[in-house]
Image (cartoon, rainbow, N blue to C red; front, side, top):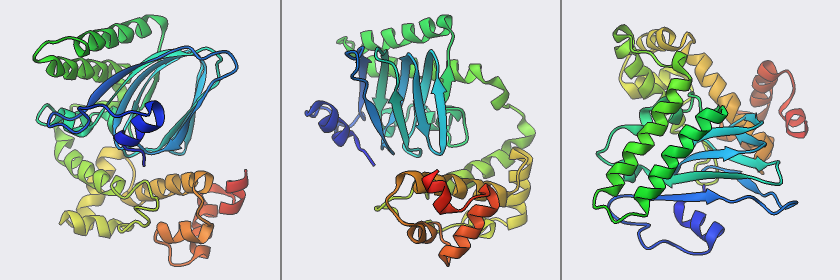
Length: 296
């Protein structure tokens, strides 16, 4: 995982003085057009900070186990739970992005609960020219505040970040509900999802999941498994086991494509007793073996 310190060292070879202060960390950067023939790739990995990015031009994003191709311009939201890699396909690019950690929003709203920062939410939004102008204007206001001497500039910046969040959410209104009848179930599903996602992504510092069965999650949440299953079904339309299976499949695809672990190590990391059990599980859902998927 890349932390803020490594981000600055790798990209700029320097560290800002305010990296570890009591208001958290925030910064903003402009993407300048690349010299022709010199596009660069952002490596595929997880970061321990949040990132909101407006980018213009053709590109390809590897986000968890998905690949999204951008034709013109897009707004993206990255979080510490999901690894990603951004491929620049154009010779000329431009854009702007901001980075911040969770401490930056301490006691200033539950920003991480918004769908754009949830593992199962929408994270990448293709924009029209008019929408791009609107987002660009918000980033310009953020930059103006950031460079000012205003005493409460970081509060103002937090408000502008919420503007970006709400703008994106309104682009996908079907994913948002305000039905009070599902609020109790949604709270349970939120806790379940947080427990599930807390186990990922897997790497050398976090080598194995601990919860895999629906009963494991129910026990940890101190509720009956039937209660958990009912809540999950009501909110998502899927069973608890289906969601766990989908997440394990997603992680297995990522590990097979990008990790250096062999299949038996991946099986162990995903809490399969035998490598053959993992291979049978994977082939059942993907129709090819893990080894075939890795080389495809």
